[in-house]
Image 1 (cartoon, protein in one colour):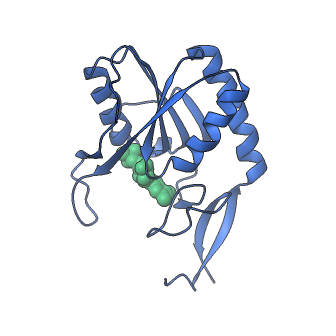
Image 2 (tube, helix red, strand yellow):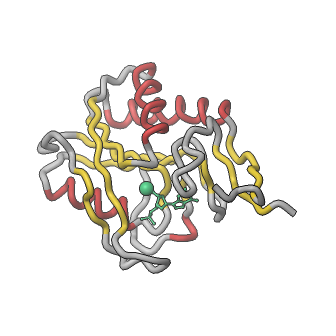
Image 3 (tube, rainbow, N blue to C red):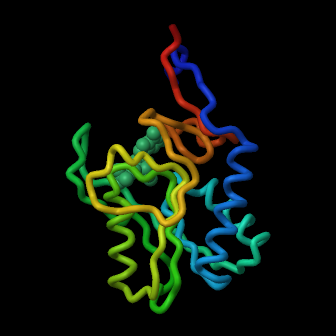
Length: 180
Ligand code: 5GP
Ligand code: MG
């Protein structure tokens, strides 16, 4: 990989992420109760979801977990704004209290699509939990019910987030900056 000219600046470290996850889990347990269906949007949210469900356990929840892979449609630099289901859930969401979990809320297209899809399939309630919010970049009207951190308008990696398939394993969230 050609990352010789990039260095990583830590934005949120392991301790910050861990204590924020515990706080989020308490809020979720308080407002949704213990019987929830966690729907993780892959790939970016897999690390966050893994930690969040264990924090939910400590907060008294007994969640079930399912996964859905979504991708923005279109090639090159311009997104057509369409979202595509690459891999669907394995169970029905009818009558479920769903907690949608994703890594970053940016334009809002991905989350609005997932929320509307699960509502149309008969979910009783659909709430959104997002690790990082970039509120300045919203195109579609959608807000998270639970937000980990507000993220500066920078390209971030780590804790499940990638750059060209790398960096997902970092235990912290960092910003890639050109070396000067
Ligand atoms: P949107 O809200 O625009 O539909 O989708 C946000 C998605 O764009 C995120 O789930 C993530 O996949 C990607 N994304 C946005 N900002 C960043 C970033 O700073 N770093 C990485 N790795 N992905 C990002
Ligand atoms: Mg994503």
